[in-house]
Length: 215
Ligand SMILES: *Cc1c(COP(=O)(O)O)cnc(C)c1O
Image 1 (cartoon, rainbow, N blue to C red):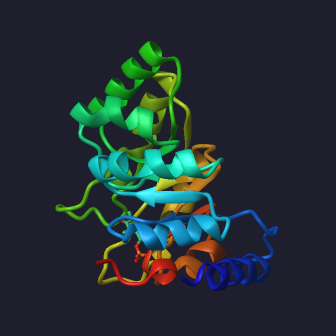
Image 2 (image 1 turned 180 degrees about the horizontal axis):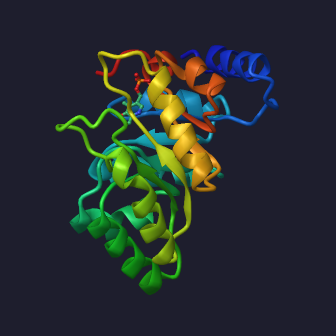
């Protein structure tokens, strides 16, 4: 477990980018990790985690939340509308709002339940056909639509194409957030979180560099 090492690297990247220490939130991506490893990171004091599946989160997080206070779990994987209700009870933030139907479902549930997780729109910055996310050309209109629904939209999220340098994708996401007045930028993973911080990331999603390879 190398939580301290990752936190130190985040601090160094914040300083190098002349950003305040603590301006970047580490989301420790615990998907597919053995419970003992997640427990060790909780015991070391970290409280913000990322998961990509509703079912897996429903199995593991109620017990961890009972044992540790102040836990936040962020959904960073795709969300089917038929799991949206369950997701609203499990997650403190959803980073993968990627289509009007999902936004409409979340808005209906938010009215009914009286609360809603913080939301990020996932942007498919590489316009990859197999990848989730709203394409760049449609993003401004979708931001307006999500806001018109009264949802708590905090920022944008992206997963750059695996076979490209991430820099241009991070820059594009930053420009789209800035012109839409959005403060949150969820970008950067184990291999590129320092690059993302240099380009304005507010949330980095780091899994294997903290926990080791997924099993
Ligand atoms: C798995 C995952 C991560 C973490 O990936 P690592 O390379 O293990 O840091 C980050 N973001 C998303 C959306 C993921 O699915």
